[in-house]
Image (tube, rainbow, N blue to C red; front, side, top):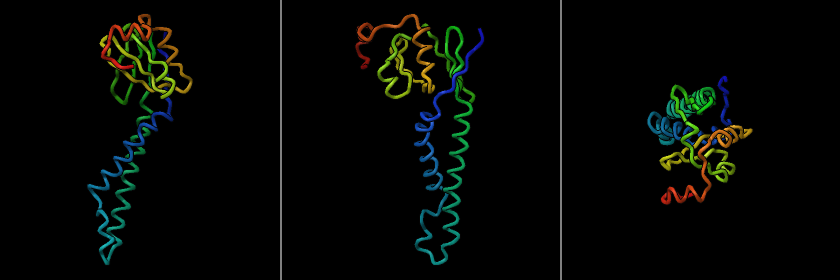
Length: 158
């Protein structure tokens, strides 16, 4: 059986990345700009140009980062697991290690929330057709009900 490729929702990825983009622009502006010195200077044009250039540089870096994020972020579904490719990193989520899927949270936030055998919560951005959720529900054979999971991991709050 060949691997199936699923792309996470662009809308949800962008929503998560927007805060990082704003931080990048503000950081570049704070480090390299004149920090508003042009307000107090008679010859303000060089300072104003520097400020505008730093904002544009931050925006360009954010756009390139966003493009790389969208292009190199996908899930590869194979028989026994899902491999999440993020830029050059890969994370493997084995279906046999998934004990509980929080469907309410998943549908509300468009982000798959599931718990592994150690009771650790893991998140994956869903695709727009919710195909990843369906695959997890069908292939995870050790899924517990909410009550069973709470008994096994009483410290985990669902």
